[in-house]
Structure formats: structure tokens, C-alpha cells
Image (cartoon, rainbow, N blue to C red):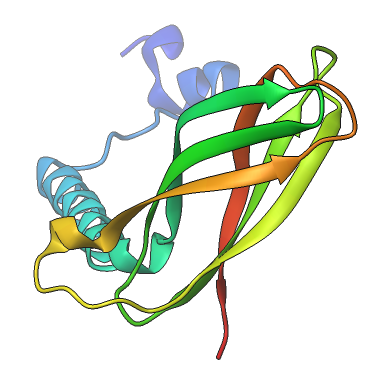
Length: 141
């Protein structure tokens, strides 16, 4: 065996050869990653109702320079109380009117009945160009 082909000389010159993980180790690691991803998916789905409340802007009507109405939907748990900040904005996105709306508990049997529709009339400082629900949050009772 020549000195150039000696494994000790090659290791000294180029470093030791890295060994790849065995096929069994790779299979175990991939399986653990899949189980963790599945567990995360189940946790996210099971935790879904706690993400409520959610709001959806439906429409708005600019009645005059000092008045507007905003139509929106709120999806929440039946027994929860929610507050939503409703705003009217002008063309520079400044708030020209706002109100906090409280949505109390309601009854229902089906998941689709968690959504309720509302119309809120707002006074404005000057003419608005749009009406939106800025945010909704659950009120601890």
C-alpha cells in the first residue's frame, strides 16, 4: 500500500470521512417529525373555537357629512360576550367616527348560528369614505 493511499495520511490531509446516518435512524427521525406535525395539526384544529371572535365587514353607507352606518358580522361562541370597535374613516384613513359595540350571549344549536349580523349608526366629525370593524375581542365576565 502506498503512503498516499494510507487512510491515516488521507485523514490528516482531508479530514475524517463523515458518516451518513443509517437508514434506520433516518426513518425514525422522519417518523418522529411526521408525528410531531400531526400532533400540531390536531392541536390547532382542536383549539379553533378559542380563536373566536371573528368579524367580517359587510358594507357601509355614508349618509351625510356627519352620519354613517356600518354593516358587519360577528362569529363568536354562543355564551361569550364580545366587544367590537367600529370605525368610519376618511380618504386619508383617519378615524372620523367610532363606537364600541357589545354583542352579548345568544342561543343556537348549530355552528353556523354562531354568526350574527349587525348595523351600527355612527356620528362622524366630517364626511367619511368607508366603514370598517377595526377589531373584536372577548370580554371576560
